Length: 213
Length: 213
DNA sequence: CACCTACTATGTCGGTTGTCATAGAACGTC
DNA sequence: GACGTTCTATGACAACCGACATAGTAGGTG
Image 1 (cartoon, protein in one colour):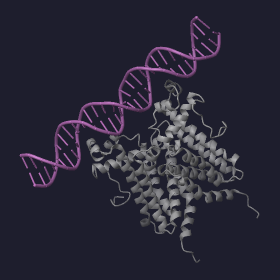
Image 2 (cartoon, protein in one colour; image 1 turned 135 degrees about the vertical axis):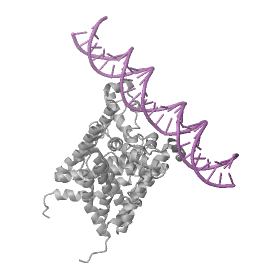
Image 3 (cartoon, helix red, strand yellow; image 1 turned 90 degrees about the vertical axis):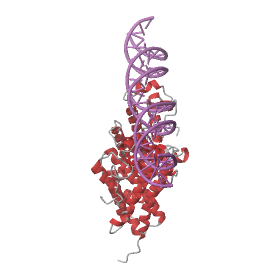
Image 4 (cartoon, protein in one colour; image 1 turned 120 degrees about the vertical axis):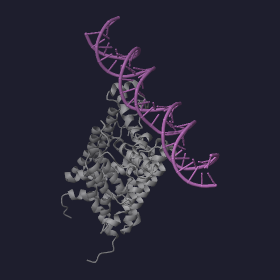
């Protein structure tokens, strides 16, 4: 947790440079209230950053800030996915999914239901239009998906199937996050993990060499 | 489609009363751009309603309007779910899920990716705080879930399991909608339907009386 | 010292937001 | 025709938004 190399490591207040703090703060505020409700001034204040620095570091305005926040979130998620192979002694697709969901159970249990997923929040507000944030959004989702695919392929799941399962896993997670926040309970997260487990386990075994028992 | 009793029937412009039109317009605008980006004035204009009527019909202000829009969406979704039993000759859980997803494939294919789900859009923007829209949000989701549970139970799925599957189905759908809008493709919808099909089919068969074949 | 660049500070602009106050029209009923 | 209710019209308010202009400071290099 204190390990700065850990994928969960986040820039604590006043550490890191103002620019990085603003991107991080933007992601935090966006996932709590959405993009439109997150003002540039709010971000600056939350990051304890000089207001004049915003237009200096982000000449592209709010769109640039939001885009970088969303890509930061995507990279963070991808790094967390990749961290599974270090912690698991017997890697499996269903174990991977549980690993991916775990931080959300912790988040809701310890910090409440204020904050959701930055990617979903941004998509809900902006994906319907033609915002400049759209390309970053696509990249963030693609990198997250790619990380999951990499893990699954490493377990012997065929690439095509791995892509489908990645879409399913992330989709179910996002929906369960919404559900959890609306009802203020973590049960939906447990449900999707439990229900998808057999399906994922089977996909993992299919990739294994035939067991001679 | 022209049948006013059909669950897809929607108030066409200038039909129905101004109040109802505003609720409907609010839902349409919200699911395209989110709650915060949807102004009361936008709704009034989109509904071709008199601006003065807004404060007359919605003394509770924007929160009331958004709340009713979200509940309207929940009822609409629930009605669509319930319509499955009329159209299916051999009802099954996987068939139900395909039926639930179908309108979204049509929506994206014919009208583009501008509009997403009103429930998800509202949840993303408001579920983290303590908005007055939260209770309506919960009701909308509960009614949607309830409709799915009713169908599954009618197929012989045990109630507890039906609740879990309903959460899984709606969660996966919501995530796939986001994914589709971000990448401007309907593939994610097909993927979740295809991947969940075996799991749902098995749940349906488990509820059947033992087959003497 | 001058000089350039990186960064910060602050004020202001036009536009939009939700809400409210006030007045007027439409329409029924007595 | 008078009255009461329902609905509509319009203007104004304070608060806020993102973007920009301008000026200043800090720190290094020559």
